Each structure stands twice: as C-alpha cells, then as structure tokens.
Length: 374
Image (cartoon, rainbow, N blue to C red; front, side):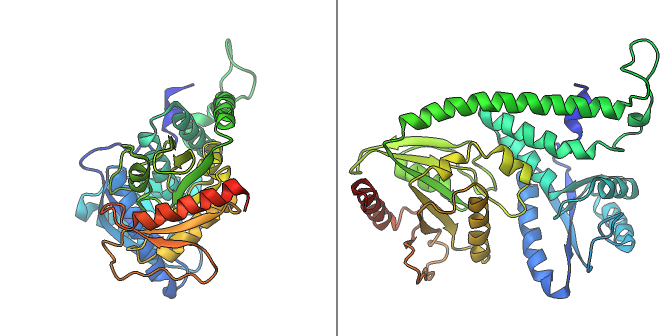
C-alpha cells in the first residue's frame, strides 16, 4: 500500500505547537448552550490528542452550508483568528463531508479536523493490544474509503503503457482497491482473534460475569482496580482505557466473578469504531450484570446516561440487568440518586474508596440470586 494511504485520516501529530480553534454549529439560538457544552468536551478530546484550544466559535445556522459547513463570513473570520493566535488547526464538533473538509483546508490553509477524525486519532495512539490496534486501523480505513475521491490531484492521472493496470484505470481506483484489500485482511485477522476470544468466553461460561460500562472518564477503571485489586492505567483524561481487561475474583465473594473493564462511550462516536469494536464489546452483551458508572459531578450526567444506553442498545446489551453507580460524590457530596423504577442506584467515590461496601453487598446479593435462578 502506498505510504500516503495511512495519512488519509488526519495524522494529528503530538507537538507542543498544535493550537486549534474549535467550531460548533447550533441549529437555533436556544441550542447554543448545548453546543457550548459539546465544545467543552471537544476541548478535552483535543487535549487528549496533544493539542490545545486557542479559541472557539459557535455559529447559529438552520442547516450546514453544503460547501463549507459554516457560512463564508465565519470562514473569513476564522482565517483572521488563526493569524491572531498563531493557530495551525481548526476542529469541528461534527462530521464534515469530504468536500467540506477539502474546501475548508483550501480556504484556511491549515489542517481541518472533525470530531470523528479526532476520536479515531486518540484511539490509534492509545491502543495497546493487538486486537485493539487492528480494530482501530479497520475503523480508520473504513472512514477513509469514501474520502479518497478528489483527495489528491494525482488521483486523476491516467496510467498507461507497459506495466499499466489497464486502459482508463486511475490512481484513485488503484488506491480504493488497495484500501478494500487491506480492510478485508484486517477483518480476516479479527475473525481469527474472535475465535480465540470465543474459546476463552466458553471457559468462563459457568462464572458470574460483571462488565463496567459508562461514559468516558466516569471512573470505571478506578473502580475496577479497587474491586479486583488490579492496576489498570487511570488518568483524568478521555479514553484512558481502550483495551478490555478481565479479572477473575473469588476472595470476598460467594462465587468466582469475572470482572471486565471496557472502553468508555462518548457522544457522536464514529459508527466505524462501534462496528470494529463490536467483538470486544461482546463482553458487555454477554455479561450477567452491568455496572453503569456515572460521573455525578458532571452537569450533563443525565445526557451521558442516555448516550451510554444508546450505545448499549447498538451492541445488543440493553437487556442486560444493570446497577447505576454514581461516582465522584467526593466532588458532589450533596448528590442523591433518585430512581423510582426499582433500578438499584448507589453513590460512591472510587478515588476516596467510600460507599463501596453497599455496592459490594448489592453485587453479592445479585450474584446469589442469579446462581439460584431467582
């Protein structure tokens, strides 16, 4: 495969001078606050990718501009802002079409990154296991494929003569075929890994299985480490955990329990990532119980719950029983969970190790009911 293929998805280099202006689009003036909150999250994503926010703009517009996503007036304003702050990147909170991205880069003369590309970049740098690296590469290439058209001038060249693939074949068609071939190879390799995972899951079949789910940076890995006496990496940063980690515990529990830590969810998650990580997320859909960890200090926590439940539905895990575990009550000590539908909801601080005894008691009681078939 030609070396430039790997750079179709923007390669967001981790440099000290990556200064980005963030841009969001609000369909009505009433939605500006919602978009502002989404840009706060985009700023965290930028930080996780090694960039810093140099400014932001929100435009109220009933529909995106077909050519630039935003209006031409804001394009001109962004060009001035970039000059004023010495910026070298513009990040959009929504997905851009290939044409919009090309037009913006031509008009602004800087790198243009949309939210899916940014998330894919973070996943690519955080993946550690063979499976997660393959899954991220697959998602990147599937995002890339429809964006090859018109990406480079050389794509339109005609190749002929000795050694040519055939009359009228363009470089673009060659590149497309190479990307499709690579996608097929990655899917084959992931299928082989899925068979290995399936064998491991069969060995754990009789055990009680608990999976940690929730929005990114809610504290899942911190709680996982405490309950399983593990040392999974934690940080106050989005997508610290990408690779699923499984631990079998028996000490302190009436039966052996399999705990699985999983990747955090986020809104506007590229569907290619959900698809490519589907086999990894089967740990969630095959669990006997989910611990849905929520950051109760987040003012948008209700929306985060809804977004997590949406992803659970996408992967077929919406029927698995769950506890709502409100974390970080050390930051919001007055928080009280309110649920009238019979859902078990608990308040804890994984960092301070408070509220864990009631959680473990509920966990043990549920596992015993599960074993007895009640």
